[in-house]
Structures are given as structure tokens and as C-alpha cells.
Amino acid sequence: MLVALVGGFLLIFLLFHMTANLFILRHDDGQWYSAFTHFMGTNWVVKIFEIVLLGVIALHILLTLWLALTNRMARPTRYHQPSKSKTHTTSKLMVWTGILIFACLIFHFTDFYFVKLGWVKGEYMVKTEKLQESEAAQMQQFAMQMGMTPEELLQEMEAEAANYGNEIDGQSTKEYIDHLREQLEVSNILQRAYGEGNISDDGKWIRHLTYDDRQLLRRVMPESDPEPDFYYMAREKFTRPYIVIVYLIFFAIVFMHLRHAFPSAFQTLGLNNYKYNNLIEVLGKIYTWVVILGFAAVPILVFLGL
Image (cartoon, rainbow, N blue to C red; front, side, top):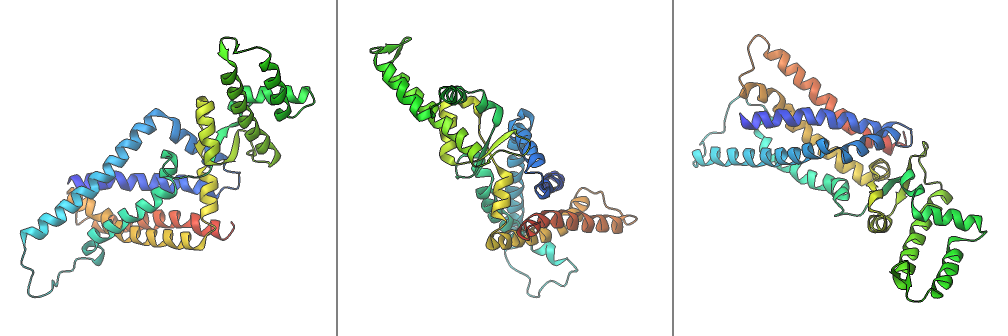
């Protein structure tokens, strides 16, 4: 029953996750999807839910493996004749499809979730206003007013700092110059973003930041809080044929798992009845096809350039 309850929770989550993924197909420069991922990555309620979700997935895996092992141990000697029951094939393969789904989840997490944790390098974005209000932006603006490049301004300030001796406003000259150099690096990120047009259409995000850019901003400007650019990463990854094929195989395995999971959850919880068993079966088929086709539509349509 616990496996059924946990599975039911995951069925609801899959529907939610599939719906959110469809935002990737909007040709709005990622405005909807970026707003969604920003909310999911910064809201504290969602962060708690994220921990709960990972715990639920782990619990589901452990419980199903434990059930499979205890069932097998209960009859160590196999039947002499193969079973003639009408059990659906997907039911007999539930443990194996579950193990394959777990393996595919590691691949999926490496593509996306581990990027968020900083374990894998990816593409990042940062709120434009956070950099525009930074000391680096002020330095860049001042350089323009002086008719200089930020590098030339830094050289002038370094030369001027040498005249102050060992300290400037209670800070050592070396620390002051190191601080200016870090601000120059942030200024270069801004300059590159505007020069290469890496600004979202709504002007709210600076995109296509590298892992090194992210590390610099987190060190120099912790308040900027760069986020993974999942919209760009998904769009870029699904242009590669082998990644699309791997994900479609993944979805096919999930289809087989869900095909049995939906009606079996009702049966385990005692919610089935001969009067509406057929309805549960039909709803299960509709749910499974909608979820899997929704997931599969993203890599297929992105790969086709749509």
C-alpha cells in the first residue's frame, strides 16, 4: 500500500513535470520556462518539496526492490511449469523497467539536476538588473564617460592607487587593486553579453554564461546568484541525435512502467470495482499516452527545429 501511495504521488508529479516541459516549445526566448525554473529554484516551499520528492523516489525504489526480493525468497523453488496466468507483461517487467528507469534518471540528472548542484558544468544565466546595479557596471559606465575602456580605467586607478602608499580607506593597496581586477572581470561579462546579444528578449536575463563566469559571480557578487539556463541547455542538447534517441528509449521504458502502475495503484488501495474497472483501465491508458507523448514531444520537435 505504501508503494501504491508513493507511486500515486509520482504519477501526479510526472503530469506536472510534463506540462512544465512543454514551455520549452514556446518560441519566446525561454521567457516562460526561465520564469518557471527561477520560481522552482528560489521558492523555499519548492526547495522543501524537492527534498521530499527525491526522498519519495528513493523510498519507491527501495520498497519495490524489497518487495521483489521478499516475494522471491518466499518461494525459493521455482514452479516446474511456466505460469499460465493472465498477468499483463508490463506487470511481470515492473522491477526490471524500474531498474532501467533508475539508470536513465542518473543520465537525466547528469544532464540537468547535477548542473544545478554545481557537480556538472553547464550554461548559466543571471538577472540583468543584478549586474546593472553592480560596482562593475558603475566602473564600466564611468570608463565610458572618461572616454576609456574599463581596462584603461583600471590601469589609471592602479597608477593612482600607488600614490596612496600601503592603504586606501583602511584597505591594503593590493587588496584594493585585486578587488578592482575582479570588478573588471565582471565588467567584461557584461560587455560580452551586450556585445554578443546574450540578453533575453524581455531584457531580464543575461544568458550563455560559462561555468567560470558562474564561479566568478558567486565569489565576487554572491547576491547575483547565477542560475542554470535550462531552456538553452535543453534546446541545445536535443539537437544531438544520440541524446534524442536515448531519451525516447527512456520514455518507452517509462511507458511500460506506467502502463501497469496506474491501474495497479487503484487495485492495491482497494479502489477498484467491477462497475468501473474498465473506466480505470481507460483512464490509465489516456494518462500514460498523454504523459509519454508530452515528454517525447519536446526532444522530437526541438530536434526537428520546431
